[in-house]
Length: 471
Image (cartoon, rainbow, N blue to C red; front, side, top):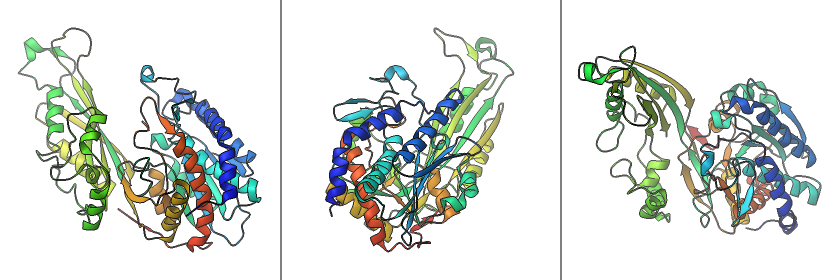
């Protein structure tokens, strides 16, 4: 497969321009989790809208119950499919800022990479699509498909208002397929398409003991220590084989298909090297299952944080009055997030030691999604990726969760393609986030090719058979 030479030449000739645009976007600190950054988040939305207008889209700011959505459209291809392109302009916090090797909101280029918060997650990958649209409009004066671009501002906080926004703007967002570039490839030498996304739920656990911290000499051994009680609760969530020990948790989780297992085994994955890169003695997970299966196709239950008691210098001999923890679960297959939330909450409450009070609050209900690789839209994306990177892609899963993928499935009921080009070592959500420029520029060509491939996929205007099943 190959990209139209005119499109390729245009993309090659605009690389410096696209890089400058990405730097300007990175410079806007659109941290959606920080209320003090609300003005920056709104400003970033306007920046995206202005760029969409500059390349020839009709664009506007759509208000929601939370942060606004940057929306653009080009509907000049009557009788051709309409594709909804989704991404997000909000970013994660940058703490601890002292670990960054360059300012997180400057977009610093070195060693063939651009470093900055949002470089790959997801400003750079949104820009790939807009740059590809620009290439079509500037070289041909039109697009081969109709496009609607939806760039939200709350993905990094769980997209709490996105469902309602999609319902509110359902007519405006109506499309024949959705394209999402918020994922990674397997490696720089192995282009890939994501065909499964895990779901997500989470819990806050609080364990209360005495009304206030008490002297460990007077009361130690007589008062149940909330930190020890919480540690006991958390230790009981899994068994010695790394399986979640909550009855019913694995309902809806299928065993790995033998053909898929063979595909995983054929991928160039070095478990020892991965442990070395992570600076851990060895990888873990469920006994008897490989790391890729555990990361992509098995559910998890993790403790994300635990705190309580004294943290200052020296020693403070107390029995603390409280302890807290945050938990999350990644879900797969047919697992129901609402049911899993209830099962875990009840298990924690039921197994709390006597002498303490436990309060569990839960939230999140992102469903897992599986996308059929046999759908013509996915096949079109595979041809486009081959055109952009010179090699046919493999199919992989992702351990992360993308709430809008489930939203589009549940509300819009349209086929979806997950065609991101980030790398596993891009340090998303961490200091020194980066985007390899080879991936960025190759991604622009891939999206330009995708818009040519989609009309050839058989995707008709006005709908198409969904390639997904959801849990």
